[in-house]
Structure formats: structure tokens, C-alpha cells
Amino acid sequence: NNQVEAVGLCKSRSADPGITALGEQQAAAAAEYFRGVAAEGPDRLRPRRLVSSGMTRALQTAKPIAAVLKEHGVIPEVQFDWHEEGGCFGGPRKERGVGYDHEHGLNRRGIVELLPDTDVLIPLEWMGRDLDSSGWWIGGFEDE
Image (cartoon, rainbow, N blue to C red; front, top):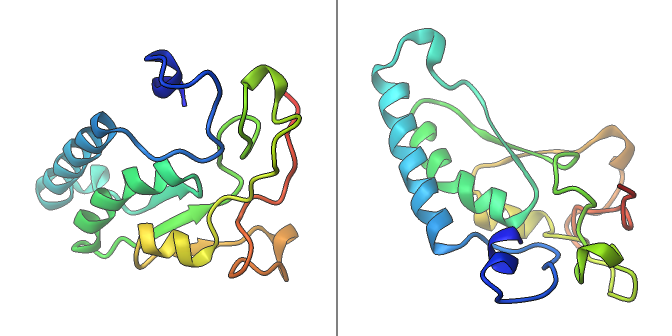
């Protein structure tokens, strides 16, 4: 959101944007870094977990890293209580989603399409919720 707003492409935030071309390059560079550390780094520095939020751009960032770490037995996890400040909402930040449709983020299928072999960790308070038909974001608009 900050990148899109900074270059003047829009005057408000997208509820769940993807990463930019620069973000894709940075994710690929991070994956290459982790390839070296996982294969040749000291044991204490080798990644044992990869955790992402359910936000689209976080999943897209994690995807190339997950592909590298899969070779080392690391299964990516998605944590739904890790998200952008305010949650999933569109419109101008100062309006905090007022007057805009409520967004629910990706459902389980959308998450797994972006980040295959994911362990989708559901918070206890969300147990029994149908993440297959609705998205992961259950809140409205968080206060600052």
C-alpha cells in the first residue's frame, strides 16, 4: 500500500494488495540468501520455520523462500493474527474503511494456491469457522 500510494497510483489503500515487481525481486533475492544459509550456514542460523501472515503480498513474498526451504524440510505456516495495522480494509487510511465494503482476505484455497504445502494455523477463537468459503479476516476495522 505504501509503495502504490507513494508513487501516486492511488489515493487510498487496497484491502489486500499483491507485491510489486520490486517486491518480487526482493523475495527472489531473499530466497537465494536462504538457499545458501540453509545449505551451508552454521546450524544455529539454518531456518527451521517460515511464518507468513495471510495478507496476499506476504504470501507472495514467502513463496520463493518456501520453495527453497522445502528442500530442507521446512513447511511454511500462515498466522492469521499477523496482519497489516488496521486489518483488511480499503479506502483512505484516515477513514479506516468507513463507507467501503468489508474485506475478508483470501480463503484457504486462495492461500494454498499462493503458498503450496502450507500449514494453515487457525487461532483457537476462530475454530469452527469456515475458511473454505470465507476469507481469513474476521474482524471489522481495527482501531489504531
